Image (cartoon, rainbow, N blue to C red; front, side, top):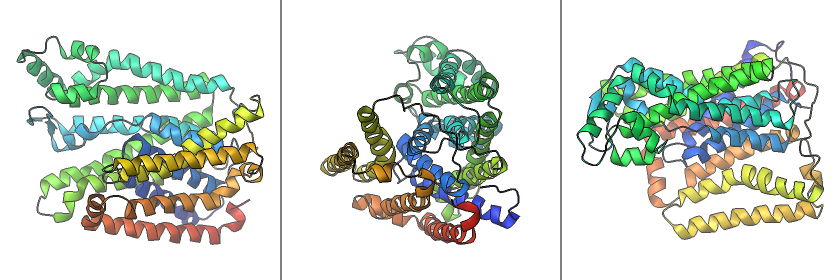
Length: 450
């Protein structure tokens, strides 16, 4: 699809649909959703289907690419709990429950680093739909390995200096706690290296340790994201891929930081009842802004040539192991797990229900593998992933909405329905999503769909 000649209001529909899609999914993966990196993977899957649906790009388009893009979103999922209230000018200790004053600007810096680091690999894999640069299989290893190496090197070196300069209060508080403890010895740096990246240990044993460990990891991830851009843009000379990667990172940096103001408003205006759900609103509008801004970025690149390039890296694998791989990874892990795992998470209080849900998900994957090997699923599996996105995109979104609203034990359901303003926002967003989806489908049949 070429969008350069489309009217601004039509582009606005795409941007709004992208914003609502990611807003709902980022909230769904959050508090009282199913959280963690798995929830981020589900958000990445639905947004990737949205990109397929809107842009109809054929470069490298496949079910395998959809799955890889979704998984890549979870690879860079950071921890952010200790950072959110720093915009209010305080740092919170997990061991002593004390608070420590800090400069709000240092909290903003940490949030910008947090956001910049989050979608690096995801933005890169989305860029593969728009870039004409052909990659060898080892190029992908380079794109992943270089940032990971930079991350660990930064975590052991420069990130400690940056955190010490930007937010010296945290480092000093950790040092004071160590000096006053009979069980700990050394410096914040030596203790970090001794318990490398072990945030769980720091949370339990070290006052302000969770914050300090999280900040080191956050700054390191941001440096690694920058390394990903440099690798793609200059190392592999992929101009389009590099730009989409860095613009995607910048989009999330802004998107995750601006809604952090909800925590400041909650502090300043404690009498406003709906601000008690500041965390939920931060989640929703982080996704909303990112979905909208990143869609606008992709619209700017949608006039790039689309030659239907397909990198057949898996073609050399014999048919049977290749089909088993697709059944296990592409279908079972990437396409089925985002459906079955949220249900299992919702029934976390019941081990029997959780185990049963995983067994059902595994069983569906095995059945699919058998049908593929028997040749019964060849027609569906070989179909164009771009064409199927027209159905898969609203279907997966609807499944996630149904799980969010209706699955789980009684406590989980009560938590959802007791949050009035957040629930209303989600219900309005569900209605807006399908109104926008059918509007785009109706208005753009000739421009959007092959």
